[in-house]
Length: 254
Image 1: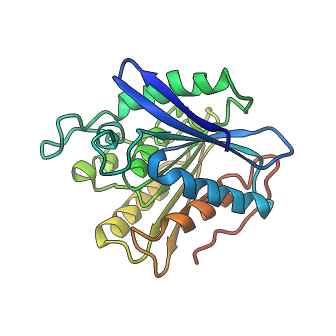
Image 2: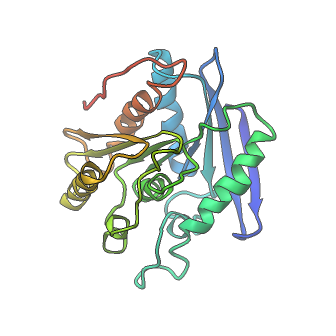
């Protein structure tokens, strides 16, 4: 663990609480942003350490992006930051994903690059549930900033599945840098969560090929509250298997 740092975003009027950890040694580091950092950073670090011990990936710099309060804290702004559209039945601040994406790419990553060494053209991002929805928002665009995305149990249901609507997710352009997207869900999650992931997979299979490699995993016996550790471990294995310093790893569904 490197430590904890506050970072104020004046455009968003929010001071984010950052957690940093280094995992692995012996080569150029990749930066991975861990959303929902108040709740998901520790399991993400544990999963990365397990993958590193198995030799499945290059060294990582994990950066948890939190609010100083978990899911139910009044300080938490995940309902604003991770949602791509505003829902009338949600808090007034929902629908701020575009502004949050600007914060990550124009404020947070430059802040990190001024302080730490990592491969600047190969930044990853992880999310689970609502933050997994944001990972889809960030990766499924014609010119994605992020090169590797882990979207575990993503909340595709948001706003009548707006992320699935036509034109919402152009695949990375053929002439752009290649990207990797890992999708997962527990088989005992709700029919909505498992069914929506299959809808997304069907759309990706039917779309013309772009510069995007993707896979999906379903974990037997796991639900929305228990699938996170397996999703992160399997996701790190697959996302970094093709990176220098990583080796091919089978996707674990157990």
